[in-house]
Length: 501
Image (tube, rainbow, N blue to C red; front, top):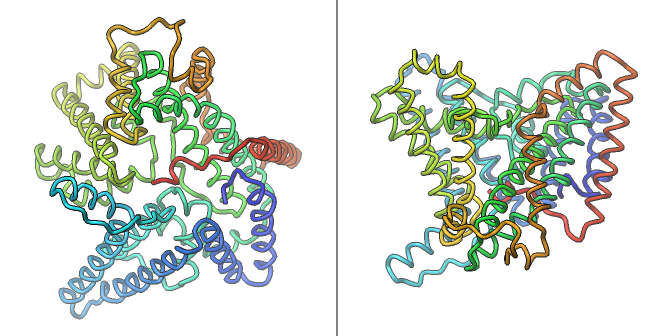
């Protein structure tokens, strides 16, 4: 059930909201249980045959979390207790990783093993459960926090809701226990708040606009280049750059649109999800980019991989090794394929260069450079170029396809801009229209206020002025209705890109 469809917007969401606040009048615990149950239904609507897998994962991690909490605080036999808690944590994390490895990487491993050993092993086609990367990482963070920070959860309904909460279940953000549990325990969460509802509806509408109009609008130009390239055709200079820029903005507005919708839906339930994007295409270094792009995943990789491996505590060599390992594993998290692994490796190299440059320059010179507009513009352009080049690997299904697109981008003898471009011609697309799309999306991404700022201001207005709240809610509702109808009128409805990860 996509957020962009009639069944979700006109059936599922109204029923869930009405049920939530109606039940909350009698029992806040019952309202939480209702939200947990409908979140399971939401997942089951996608993959009914794998709902039991999600339920088993929740039960198993909850039980392991209680065991960690049981042993960790024992003051009488601290060493033995800590060892037992650590054993439970390792067992739980290993089980989660084994589950993820089987469903996400088994076919990739077997295919490569057959290639290297010239064997014919076959385990059949393993179906990838939607959202498994997100709900697995969320629970790994819970187990790690249970051991390291003493996080504990005695309420199974609240824990199940924390994992399955439908706005974030399929494509994030990756949540921490401490971010959600206090909200589920507050009575204010279960009382209808018209200001939160109107503000949330507006952010949901903005997310719909990003997905349905912007991301889906430019996506044909990306598909027209990358799909034929993976099939063996070579794009020319203009096609390669158009396809790559189209995907650069499609990915951003698709995933940030989903994140906005998740945040907006949560505001309707008086729940705050963390912002997941902060204008990443305005970053002036690759480190800055990763502080702004998919923030919850970046924080997870930093806290539970990079720092856990030692971070920068054991010298510069170990630091660079940890950086590369973190980024390669981050690439592998996105998908079981060599293009993702090399994409992660490339970003690891970018971080090496970035940190090495700052180390060579030193704090004093870097402070001076950071004050220079010319340097900032150059740093932004270089960062953007590096990110765009890496997106080619992220989008391509094959390394050969990525190679063809990159070869076209850096072709020293480009075809004339006004000539016939076969890949776009075959798709019935006009290059000038595609570049117009990219310019418009670039202006939005580079210069307009991001949805985080718009949301905060809209919420403040809704809380301060009753009439303004009514206007914002009415406009947002009209936008949602129009965009849902527009999406329904299309020949097909596209899923969010990050559903594949």
